[in-house]
Image 1 (cartoon, rainbow, N blue to C red):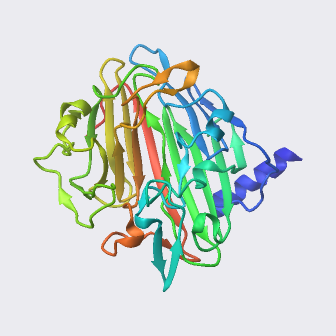
Image 2 (cartoon, rainbow, N blue to C red):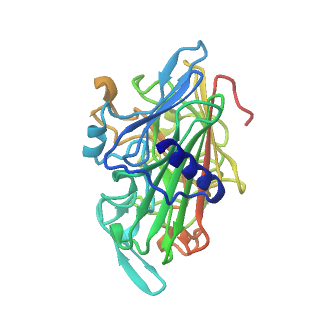
Length: 359
């Protein structure tokens, strides 16, 4: 009966993109996907990626995402490593915004500002598991969460889902959807994994070679809030239009890399290519989002991670495809307001290989 119910939910998901039929789920668990020697584990705590194991150029396997050993570690931590963050990822100035004449006050958790939806954002909550197939032709897992009106200060009831799907050899698609059920509300979801292609316990990411397909950035003030202007990267340390090692110019920056790139093109397009020469691993990421937050991991300091390994500064990096930060207070940025009947959808594709992708 349970298998039939799960199958029915999945058919609804395929048809409509959401599942209203939730399996009973009262605590956080661990779930696995596997296709050949490509595997990953997830938890419904924050709809998070716990591990992702891929081969190197010699066929040796390594876990390339940072994280903790136990679910308890995740639930006790304020670090949303591997999680889906929101309702609104990144920063909101003054922990407030106005919508249709109403001022909404949020919970500040980074100085006077709100970061990643606040201390009780989507990355710090238990989601429902609405569909899961560990192996087979299309291994997949889908998490859903119904956020109530006023939760974390945001207006309206919101139905959210995220699907992780193995779509081919060493390829994982991620689809985030959100439907406003009764009121307009801002939505900007992001996947917050920390990557190290040498393996989560291999040291820092400064020698990784990076290419970002974004010729502009949204510069920020001393609180990391966008000033509202958009400037070209040409001739600056932010220029990754051609591959550069991450550490080559990091000391030229006032505050390292915690930067929103305006991605070139529209629809599904390449966002970034990451390469670790020693292992030979490449990660190519594509998305339909307008922005990409590249974060070089400056605040990762002395965190006890998997297997007792201590993560030091720059132990991993983040690629958060997203809407622009503080768009709710920046009228010249693409709107993040989602209205009833017009769902939000954010798609990403991670492709791992040991051969250079076409740039």
